[in-house]
Structure formats: structure tokens, C-alpha cells
Image 1: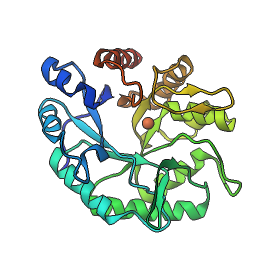
Image 2: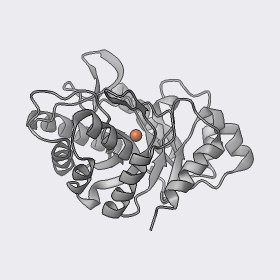
Image 3: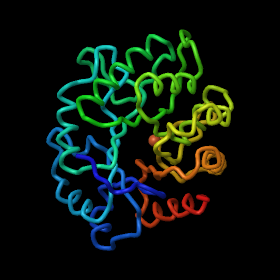
Image 4: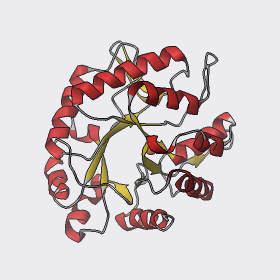
Length: 271
Ligand SMILES: [Fe+2]
């Protein structure tokens, strides 16, 4: 089911605005990442574009709707749809977020933060094992940006991530911008976050822009990567090695060539 194409170097998010441009100009981009939900639950109007692009490029799937932290488990209809998409496009891997959005048939459009507790680790790890068995994959989960912490937290975010990986066998998509945003919003040292993650658990990096609201940073994926995040990315490459990296850009989507320039900037930092 999984594609053997190697994902390496710096890819970019596949945006609807660029489908035709990509087919016409066949840009020198090593891989694209697609938002899974854009092609699930009947959202198949652009599937032909996707399959045409797929002929020339490796793909990864990145979702926002799995809700791996739901205390009442991951939705089976969601997983059925995701499995269909995996079979259709043969991605190199499948990722979502270490967060929750659904509970008891109530859905939010947000990636809500999880309490960093041992009880959460048990719930999330059981959900991950279920998903991995159901889909037959190694799941990759991203550290989300957040704007609150719970008073019941029992550990740091990196301790939480390490325990989830140990217990479930998943891998991590490390969003460098999200580490920076959280370090500002929750007042911790972003480098300490990186120093405390083992090198072999990270499958992919994300890089994106955010909005500075002064009192907090808002992760809007609507701008170029800022200098502070580039610095942290350099630090992460030094710690983890040349991890495949994705330029994410979801709001105020620029031209394809602007995304390619950001990708080349990241590529030049590989050793
Ligand atoms: Fe991300």
C-alpha cells in the first residue's frame, strides 16, 4: 500500500492554486504534502489533478481531523475514508497532530491541546496503536502550536512526546515553527525542547510563518518563515541531521515560485 519512493530534502505543501502550474511547469520539487481531508468524504473533485501530479512526485498525507487524543477513541468512518485515500495515492507516510478535536459526536475545527498527564499518554497511545493496526502503517504525529496549558499538567511537552513515542511506537513530525510559537506563548527554552528529543524519533520537519500578536504568537501559516525560526531550524538540523522538511503555507497562499524559494533556502542549510 505504501509507496517506496524516498522522501528526502525539502518539499512543499500542495495547494489547489498551484495544481495547473505544477502540471504545466513540472517544478523541481522533491515531494509534495497534501491535506488528507481535501480528498476525503466526497471531496474528490480535484482527485484527477492529484493523481496526475502523483505520477511525477512522491506524496505524503497530512491530516487535521484524526483527533488522536479523543478519550472516546478515533472515529471509524474517518479511518475508513483515510484508508481509501491511502490506497488511492500510495503516500510515503501519513501524519496528523498530537491533539484532539472531537468528543462524543461534537466536532471543533481546532487542534486542541492535550493535558500532559500519564492518563492522557495511556489514552493517546491506545488510540495510536488502534490506528496503526487498522491502517497497517507507522503513524507520524506533529507537535501542535497552543495558546493554553492545563493546570493538571504533570510533565513538559517534550517529556510527553517522548513517553507517547515509547509507549505507542509512532514517529514525530517536528514542526519547528510550533516549537518556537509555544516557547514564546508558554515561556520555555526552544533549544531545550530540541535537546530533549532523541534523534531517531523524528521523521519530518515543518517550517512555516506565524503572526506576532505581541501578547502571543498565532500560528497562522500565512507568511514566510521568520529569522528566529530559521535559527532554530539550523539548530534542529545540527541536532537531528538532514530530516526531510516541508514548507507549509495555508493562508495568503503565495505563488508557487515563492514556495520554491523558501524550500531552496531550507535546502541550502542541509549539510
Ligand atoms: Fe505543521
